[in-house]
Image (cartoon, rainbow, N blue to C red):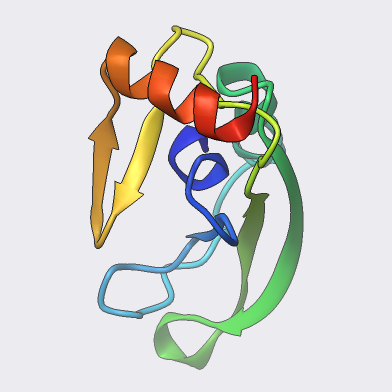
Length: 113
């Protein structure tokens, strides 16, 4: 969440229930508690992030109906977003980079805070 919230200009999208190769593993098999935990994790571990989530219908293994949990994380132009443990991340190409305190200060200056 921190990575996407700190990556200009658009943030990013997280798709739960889809594998790296695009195959749909789906969320249908998850319990209500597991779904609630996944959906609330973003606020617990990265409370300064701004995001929306929704469920999208999908076709899973064996052409069975399933669904995906899609989380849209918005870029925060007004602040550096840290995780609840105090770390901040940035996306560079297809990698996540943990920012040093110096890099965080530089990003804060760029964002005007």
